[in-house]
Amino acid sequence: MIEQHLYAIADITSKNHPKRCVVFLISDDRRITAKDEFDKLAITTERHFRARFDAWVDGQINKKMFHGWDQSEFGGNYTNCFVFKCKENKKQRRLYGFLCHPKVSDNRYQICVLVSHAFKNEHETHETYLKIIEQFSTLPDVLEAIKDFFKEKNDGKSLDKPKH
Image 1 (cartoon, helix red, strand yellow):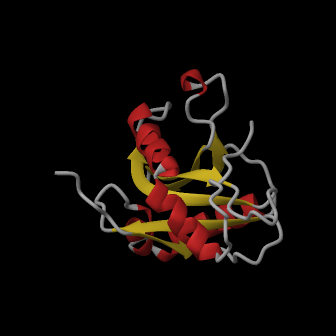
Image 2 (cartoon, helix red, strand yellow):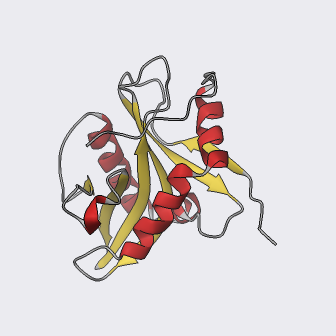
Image 3 (tube, helix red, strand yellow):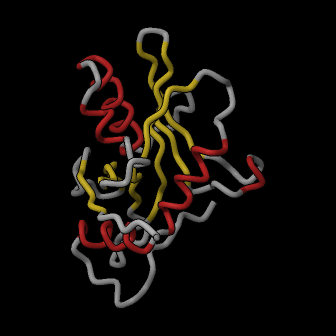
């Protein structure tokens, strides 16, 4: 029997920014852990993550704080996956998500949908995390939750993934 899950979106940064925002994917699906873990963070770690979210929203580039994966990594299969990074007491925390363009009226507007949290010990990201994120990025119920969050009618069109 296939499990049916409910999905919703909660904003972290304002969705009224003219170019970008960061949101959490929320669900009863146990693989979706970003918001639950974020809510448990120490206040200083939360502030560090929020500063990274704001830097990305403002268009900054800083691979030590956040990055995506390009065509040369993992065979180019995860170019819409994204990660925010933060160190806490010698632990490397990661919030993994995906990028998409949810507004039909403004296809340049981009969001990062945070899905899962992980501790990272190795230099390279384990591909398993990226596979899970990629699955959620194409799930119709997740895309519908994103569309509902932005309250735009898509006229049956699917959300556009970023072109890299």
